[in-house]
Amino acid sequence: MARAVKEATVAELTERFQNSSGAVLAEYRGLTVAQVRELRQALGADATFAVVKNTLTKIAASDAGVAEEFSELLVGPSAIAFVGGDVVQAAKGLREFSRANPLLVIKGAVLEGKTLTPAEVSKLADLEPRDVLLAKLAGAMKGTMAGAAATFAALPVQMARLLAALQEQRAGGEPAGVTAAAASPGSDGGQAAEAQVPDYGQAAEAQ
Image (cartoon, rainbow, N blue to C red; front, side, top):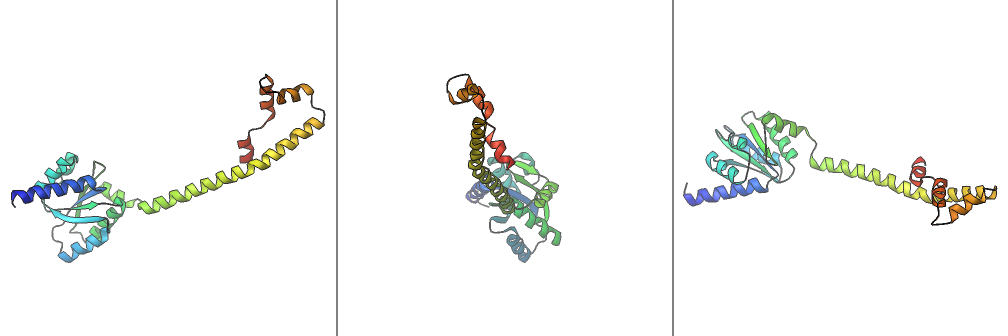
């Protein structure tokens, strides 16, 4: 391989390491062209699967700041799945394909700068895809917002009940000192007024 080609290959691999969500390293020995095509489809549109040269990939991984442990896995026939989207979805595709095609052996991965073992890649594949987690998060937030809206809607009702209760107290002959203190700002009676008013948030929650 000419020097210029090597340099271009290293530069491309370095960019992929830097711009990908993660990279999964596998041994592809014995896979047919048709099987490799099937694997690429299983990974999804946001991932690429390419055969790489170990020596050039080690240089690219080092240039990209990838942990040294990943470079140590670059032995034997190597191929890397660079994932641009959901790493979990790609890990699922790789695991399912390797189960049906034992010739594909997952050797490890790198995710957010950390090197993963094959067992950790398998655990990653057990997680729910990103879109499912986002949907669940959105549902939880929607429920929270609905609860907050109900609380705010209840505040006018609670205020009306509070005012009615205060009017009843005054009509029933509440001591004038307490009433005057509650109505007079800037005096110690502010604490008395505060004591007469319940916590609106707790009242709303009780509803």
